[in-house]
Length: 241
Image 1 (cartoon, rainbow, N blue to C red):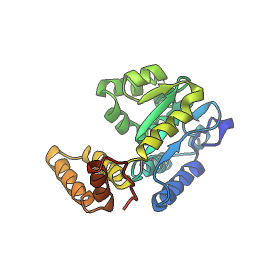
Image 2: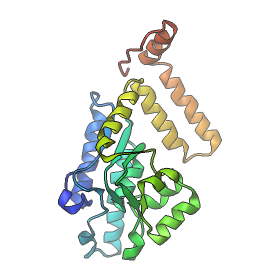
Image 3: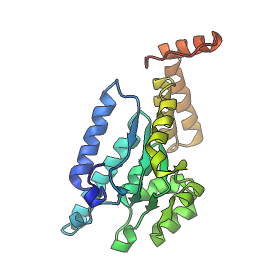
Image 4: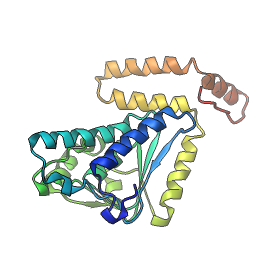
């Protein structure tokens, strides 16, 4: 994210660009993982509020739809995505971070959903993803009060996976991604599909989904290589096929 003067606030153009970028990454077989971070003091300080002024009911709904599409393009990408949160992740910024698979926060990071201060609500997926990441009551408290939480509390409530010093943020994200990228790409992809889709299903259907994607993985060259490497006590050489 590179609008530091606006604390990387999301406007329509930025969200459309994000959707396009995720589509390109999804189609590019040379890319196996993504790290989202930002320039300046803010990760994403929220939506660009100036764009809300002329919106009526239909415009508000369209704005919500675009924001949801932006976040869903990250969540639905069948590749691992890490958010390296360097500063303010408020409103739409927190919603973008929550759409990522893993969140690593700088000690300077601050999270929150302040929309009720504007007479609106989290509408880029915040009412749904926050309740799936933290305790139900905690999510309601944060949304109802618009209270901001610092990195250490975000870690305690399960909103982020790890907190590091600001100077270690990007290297920590790269280190974690490097570990993920030593694994079989198709296996990581299918794990993401099973987890994300399964959470919307009842247990029986989610388990059936798990069986189906397992069957697909057993047909891959990487499964043959992974099993052989384990039995031969050598590092696996995965090719993503």
